[in-house]
Length: 559
Image (cartoon, rainbow, N blue to C red; front, side, top):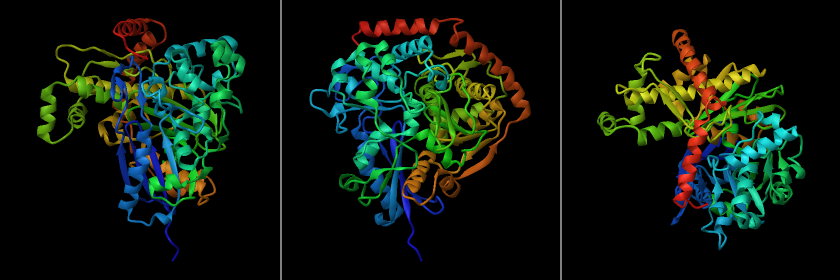
């Protein structure tokens, strides 16, 4: 009898990292373990330095938290699996994006270099760091003025979340950090660098977040026009060999073997983006299948045989999700975060007490109450822009609205309206794809929010689509493991690995025709608000943002 073989997938999320041990032959998930980031998301002040306060819209992380995942979660997953570490044939990783690490030439994060511990720009900029919106606005204006050919591949707008806007922010706000920064590294590539001592860029993050199209980045003339000192940004800080997804970036070093307990010399797969790897994990890599990875935010991805330009999409990249196919990405920058914010800051004590008495979470309590309502019964409509708008408006200076509240409005009313707003946001994205010749016929959902049946049914009713659900509770980690299997040569390509190791439950939720018709009416009101506040009808949200930023600066918010 041949010895069983395993791969390990490590999913680096927003708040924690999870390691998953997977059987190579059939994708069976043997065991998993989680490591919560000790420093979480840094939004108020630098760790241990309360005097170094951060302005609004900042979101940083501490890179040592990522190494702790390798030191703790991976060995614990192996221990729980009860397997011989020698039977692990490869390791793969996925990461949030665009999450950026400024480093020295050898990959040391600048925040770990003496003299830079108190410099905010020396830390990791998390994907939801939205303070580079002014830089993104200038990139977009200049690209449109110059008719840059790559702009249409990103729906006509570059996001403040991405590499160039964040890099330009570093240059303009802390030139000393920029000068000390040898490499500007996607975290998905940085963690692979730590594992195998080889720095290669992955095709997915490079194409979607680094404006890399048809084998090249924006040219030096364009960058110099943004800022005279930015002309060398690509050559000096960004450019690196780009590897195809599913390839091996290198082999596990002795140091990384000591961290993880895995055999030195096993293949380390090229880095991947968390949302993107969920598609093959859910066996959703064919035309018409959109995968929505729903957690703190939602990322929408799909593969297609055709190239189309979709207004407001995050990007379309050749081989960005599966080699040989066009990979599309769109997204919503706040979803689960919005529900958590409301529970933490908008729900009165009596609701928390009622949930505790019933032995359920506040989310479960509010969802049960909201599920009893008819469509439109609460009399509310909301805009889901608490973290700005990623798609299709690509403007993180927008903010949220809940319209229709009265003295009779209850917490469950607002909770349902917020859930519906995020569903309307997803429908807006689906409609944009359909109008552009990339129709969506099935919505496949992964991520933590799949556990909320009320939410899932609302999404099906709002979009009018059947909702399938990834078979794994840890879709990204399974996807990372799948890529590890390909890197080890266990499967010829990602499609073959997805067929053998991926899993999906088809049409778990289907739309109710009556509720869908009612939602058409409510969605029309959402679109009216969406276009009024988001497309120039009233610029009040930007004016309010300016007032807030001015007030923050007057109080001494540090950069």
